[in-house]
Length: 318
Image 1: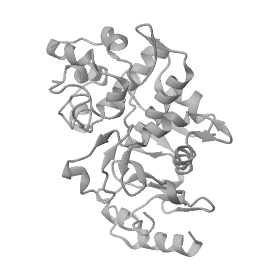
Image 2: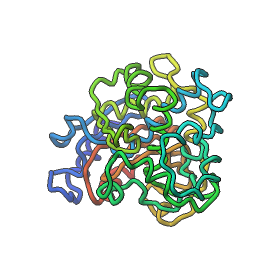
Image 3: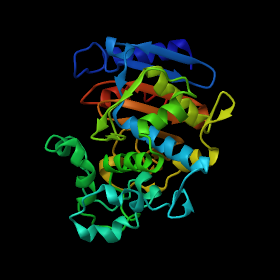
Image 4: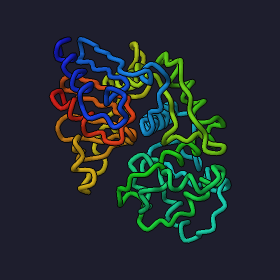
């Protein structure tokens, strides 16, 4: 990519339909191509800590990978792995009224949670409609009492529940919150200095509520592109990164397939496209997109109800 080509993308973002009348559909943009790194800040929001919403799920996944790689933890006398069943760690933390869920909860694995194949059918679980009517201290109970209608591993249903469950699991397993663990094993090694992450009651929200600077979202993309390595040090194993970006689940629902980035599969909290592309996105225009064959990383922070104009501005490089 040349500076002129990047400038053209910036121009398109400045002239696209802006639902907030901020003068641009983006707050901050970073694009790299393996040789050059281009950055542009469009609004005052792009110079500050910015909520990245579901990009928080990427941090959850990376932390799980680091936990597994460490070999320090076991559950039910077996070393932690993707096939670890999580219920024994969390069962005493939940007031379970819906006892029909027990048979499913005992089967629920880390991999089921990372791939959003928990067995739940409710794709609004732990989204705003749930949150506004309940005390945050009740959310773990709400999730585990939500009817499970399918065997874990059988059905893909995207929600915020999986990442929140993993956040609670990490805290109960390690004795420190997901946020504290992420700071130690991920943010410090990547020199991510400014950040915050909200709690849902006693647990880090996990699925959302993470605030980062634009350049630090880009760092997470660089870590992914470099297969878990940073400054010649392996932060997350290449084996785990490869599993993250592999289509573990086929995406068939038109709700997702008709998205401008046209995902055809889902990895570990990552959307996978057949066209040599994987990405993670947060509501209202937070995107981290990686195209490995061309070493392209795109990091975008925004706050748009309609993200189509934003993505259309990037279509030439994606």
